[in-house]
Image: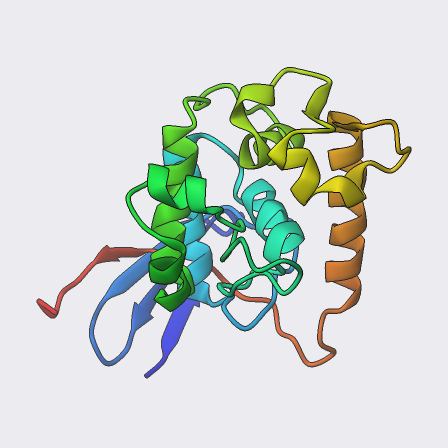
Length: 212
């Protein structure tokens, strides 16, 4: 199985691929700014990220940042407290709201989980209000806190599960502290890229000539 590609416009904005065996054709317009990597990061996964972000109105790189920060782009259960699962660390409450469970999510592939990532943001009621990566992060943590300086306060369940983000120990987890945490996690993620990693080109299926 293989792919070949070319840039018909020559401007680097459009790339088309064909799976030589199946006849499927693929296209991706534009590029990710960051060179994403990981066990579950494949051309097909990146293509699905583009589909999801188009549906929820955010940038692909921004959603990838959230997943890298929350889980290291992993589908597994959190190794820290075990109460969250997957790419954006779904909680029991979040899973229930989108019609699934942590147990079901844990069995899914990364691409299958991406569907529920999209559903989570759609159900948040914040489509059109997420203007940058920090907005997306706030919605991931607590949708009702979007637009507020304070995301969690001491005594809330959200604070209890994320108290390590209260960097100044004032009993509040603020938007600024979430941003600092995101920046720190991104530095860690990017610095751990394997030396033999090759940049991946996202793949999106646009036509299937083989009927498969």
